[in-house]
Length: 399
Image 1: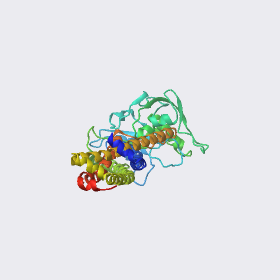
Image 2: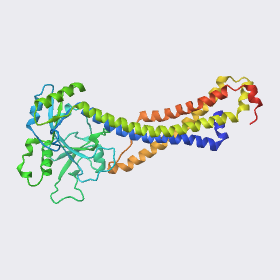
Image 3: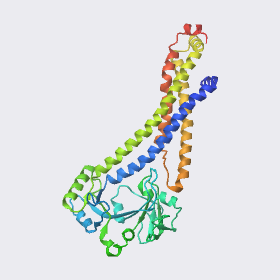
Image 4: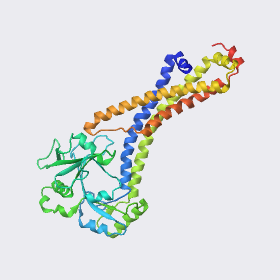
């Protein structure tokens, strides 16, 4: 109780000091939650691309289509356990790009058998986790929320843009499943069957050649897998063998994709953490200033305590506990304020697929632990100064 009474002696100063910690922890919580959300996306990409080999058109031929026969050629390469064709399209073509840390809404068509090899597993919250028949679609959690769809509803894909051209075509799909949140790419995917993917591919072709191309014989991409548990270095070697043995394609080394994801995540985390730490330093300096002033004002009180038998340890503990309490109060208030703001912004952004924050248990422990540690470190020097005071000198001091 004495610690609380000491803080109440200079209410305005205590409030301003705690406010400095509040601002720092608030910044750490909000910026950290943004980094956690971004890193969740990155981790999903690392997990997926670190366990598969992406095969597309050769360099300089982006957007080119691949003969479906290339899938069988890739399967014959030593080390390849399975290979699957893939098709993907923008779910909202014509959308103006905006600053967002979410994956854009995509329509994805693939072989259900690929799920046995993919490390990034998806599970169904309602209905099926993958479509089985033409005309069916399974929506990721974010897409289902964005378009307010439930199992049994119908959704037209791709979504017709406001400035759609006269030849724009979309199709009605029946929602047969809603996926559990993954905090990464599948949340923004709409999964359809390969025949439906080939149908959308045909729709995307120029009208002049649309009826002259057999889309059942081509793929937009190929995903190859090694045996379960194949290390990243071996997948790189398999990718190199695919490039040597299969002409007319380009297999990307998984390590190149993984490293690009990791470097992007490291840079973003460094920026957000740096901004939050800067705010925390300001808060820590305010604690140091307050505790030094508190010690100066209480010279006689400290001298009296030591004169009647208080040990150096007791004085040190008192002032250190006061600094820790300031850190904890500021940290708790700052964390709750940050949690409230991030939750509010995520709730407001759900309808437009604009969630930016993810508050994790690790972030909670970091914010509160950092606040307490900051208070303790900031209070060490003033507490030592108080503990080392000579009682006779302190009693002669006039405040």
